[in-house]
Image 1 (spheres, rainbow, N blue to C red):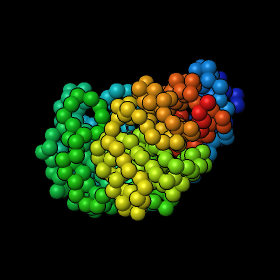
Image 2: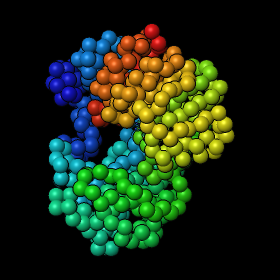
Image 3: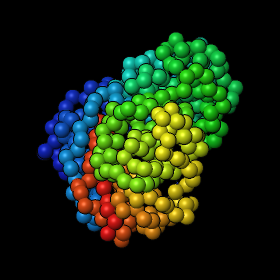
Image 4: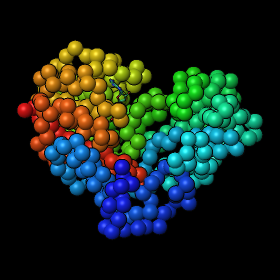
Length: 382
Ligand SMILES: C[S@@+](CC[C@H](N)C(=O)[O-])C[C@H]1O[C@@H](n2cnc3c(N)ncnc32)[C@H](O)[C@@H]1O
């Protein structure tokens, strides 16, 4: 989609020299050959076209610019492949991997962890997983950082539990990590998530605004911590305050906890049991006593008792039953947060009978040099 936007906007776009030596080969950043301003143009136009295709009337605010253009990601999932290579998948390739020495998206410390781990595989004689042949042991290295807390958790995803975990922790400690996890995934898919079978060190944590959030190794968290603060502010501005807030798809409680002062009560709904535990612990850690969390799939709920709602579904968007639940609820004001314009537009269309957009949609550039953008829509009951 963004490729056609780029070719249509061609004359308006300002070219730039890519800073990353892997540009054009790596599947990571696709827009490094444009100036920052041009990237924003591409993103806004991309979103506008998605809404137009859906025949959805909407206007858009000027995007909130990224707080940092480089080293903004707090999480990277690096593929491990025969070589050993550790990096990202090559552009348009299912199997090939770009062996990365330096990535400009996360941090120099994360570079050291990734590069040190490559040497570790060699010295320990650990076999990288070969996705094509479905053989080998080590599949992914996930590095997660608390940009505002200095914590760093490194997760190794292996095909089996037999892995030199103690040596891995020692290496991680030398490389500045504070938490160490071993996860196992035996299946055939190319995924970076598995069942955590061992954990050592401190839990991962991140601070956003006045609140601190502890995270299980794989719990979802906004990948750009500095922009997460802006995102919370935008959501707060649209939600204002009131009686009961429903924070649907609440993860570890970012919105619910951050907005708890504005509401008499906040109820979070989250499907991942580990994120639910995190959210409950986070409420306690932050001395928030009006936030409670139910472990459930939103679409399985019978009813919602709230006056204001926040929905921040996964990229796939909302289940039709979740849309129906909202329509029949008492929610007057609904804030829809998404990093996927297509599913967001689809869901807004389905909600149209009951909710309307009264304000321009907000865009936040949480993912510089990629075509992605975060969207926030404020809806009110018709
Ligand atoms: C995009 S994340 C948003 C999390 C949180 N709002 C935040 O900003 O940190 C989506 C969350 O929805 C959860 N989730 C996915 N499908 C769900 C469902 N059907 N019902 C409830 N939660 C779900 C995921 O586990 C994840 O934590």
